[in-house]
Image (cartoon, rainbow, N blue to C red; front, side):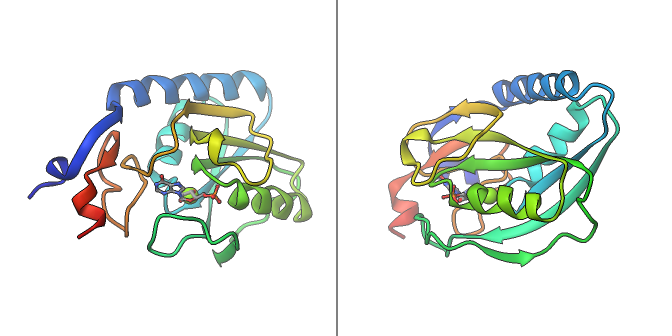
Length: 181
Ligand code: IMP
Ligand code: MG
């Protein structure tokens, strides 16, 4: 079976995502005009989004990576956030824009924004391509949002189910039998 055959439905198409990412890049470029920004990609899920976003930003921009984990291989948040790969260059004095794949409970970003401020970032803004506002357990201030989506477990455009499906170019929902094996 190929990947497409395991998808129940497409929520957001590749074309819609491309258009929206361009708009987000333009907004960021306008808001930070005259500055330099650092895009912080939250691995692994945001790697596709961050690579598109940074190319949509027309300012000097660097990229940095952190790996955080609040999920096992299942579909619900454990609530605890672990740094599994830390920053490898300083964020002190930088305008950091966190590129995140999806905001669910909010635990990951709640942790990360504080973490970056503690490390001396001049400013920290969040840019998430997808947001599930109905799932929030902790409040986070999010400056840039691509799409609000319903409370469903989604895959594609970097998002995984048990490390698969990240390479789908659109955002979709899996067929039930994939979870149920
Ligand atoms: P939060 O800490 O609960 O906000 O969850 C954030 C992280 O959980 C995201 O960055 C994703 O990596 C993962 N996640 C949340 N919802 C989904 C989903 O529907 N599909 C795949 N991963 C998800
Ligand atoms: Mg993530």
